[in-house]
Length: 402
Image (cartoon, rainbow, N blue to C red; front, side, top):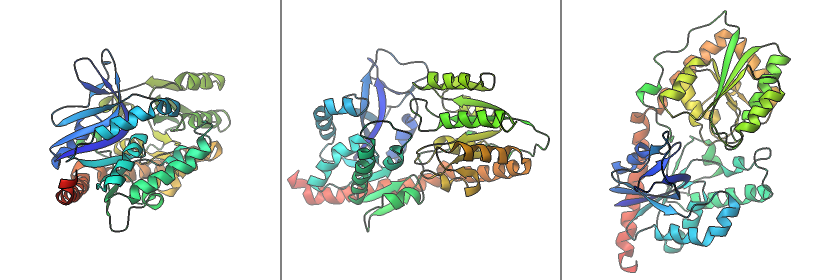
């Protein structure tokens, strides 16, 4: 049986027929579905490009292909192409295909009416929270209040209509977007840590350390990860608290120039470094290994990949109380989003307590070990099998009606 997976990530297509991603969802990610299904067809936005950049990664391969949806970026471009997008999404589903919707996402929403009309079973992988994504202070779109009301409602309906639901959190997203009564439900992260990603030991106690390097990893295409909040907090820590801090920002995007200007205005040029985009894996791990404290003041999260990867390097971590972050870090390592004074206080607490930093390091490394493939694969394989079995049952009953 073949599988359709919808996703709102954007991909690139070169004239030789290859599919590329600039960040995540490379071929090994899609390959995990092949443990249960014969072929995976990814339904996503695809942009034709003349050539792939050196740092892009192939995302298609044996058993994995793509159904290209007309490319759009943002709600206004979608509205102009909505009819073509809906038609392309519907045409991507074959009569005998199983379906998994990765939600939140507009493409999943385009397919849901067809699934509801035909009664076809489908699974959902719940990876984000639109309620947090459209919180004040993050999105300035004029329709933000409406979208914050409408999109969570729509996602609750998608989850309630699914025969099986898998969440990236253990509890957080389930409370807001519960599965249907009697539906198969499980949880597993989209993040799977190879052995190379895990540090061999916790970091030793550094009782005499006075200079600290903070690091944040994430896109600068938007401000969802709170880099502006962290820059302001570092400025306060240095200028008012007298702490000797440096900050490394790993990532790139359209807001990088604005953030660089913010750094200059605050007089932090000698203390803040932008690395630009780095390929996942060794290059990012090298930056994490040189840092002393990972800080992610996100405004919205499902389950933070960058936090898990920092924990795997035995880094002490500070983050915000959004999404599933409270399932990764204890309350004493969390602050509210958009709260610079609280973040300043937390940074000062941590870096002035070397014994606490050593405890955080050991605890984080232990927690990160829960994200090894041999642990998570059992859960996602059971989820895939259930979706396949329910689809096969439905096909036997409805074969003559298709």
